[in-house]
Length: 299
Image 1 (cartoon, rainbow, N blue to C red):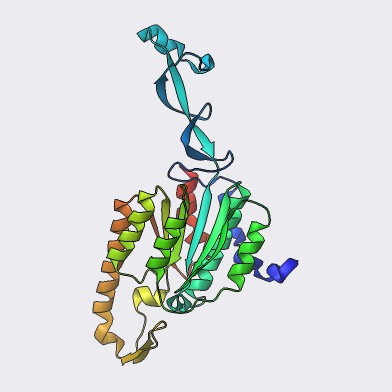
Image 2: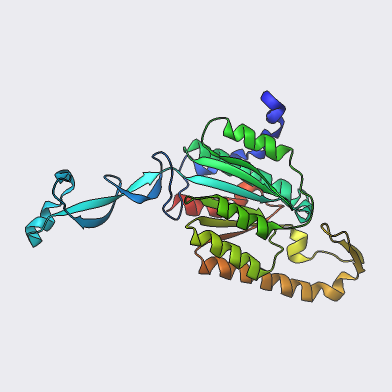
């Protein structure tokens, strides 16, 4: 197989694909695609799902005229319908060094499986998929496309991607938002070790541009439960500094701060009509995607 992407095909979780059962995953908001598809468009069409009435203008197609409204009101009105379009789904992967933490897989490796599995599903339903690896000083990007070779490009790129360097996630996300001119879906994969205010600012930026925002908040179980029972040296994966301490001394305060951080991010997402999913690296991929896929197939 070209470029040896076959060795990375394990990134596509077959159980998660089977669970979808061919049901399309839909966007929460109207999209702006280039071809017809499953998702509501922000433009009006002449078929699909009823949206509203509009007063008739001479010369327009009378086939969409509602004769029952005419009989009641003696006025001419046309039925407007929601058009359907395809989706452009951008998968944005935090590739800073903190994503190298985790067992049995690092947060970065686990995110790759989520991205490839969802990319496969979206491409199968005719949507366009793009990828951006968010590094300290740059983004490595694959533009959103819906052609058959797109999945191979994504798998190959992720297969060779390494998490490295200090975190500048928020700056990279602001830059990416500015670069996408039409409505799209942004799925962000990160541990979100950022100040809630900064996370709020960038999500508001995305939503102000009418993008759908999805956060996959990926954490290792040790980060959530602080499972350490002996003196441990904690190392900053991005800065290199370390701290040797007795975990029992800091456990309660750590768990308190972690709970507060998660609640703040959930609150931000609720206020902005964005989606937030907590993902633990020791979860099966199909279970990790269960809530997301269920919600998207019920829209």
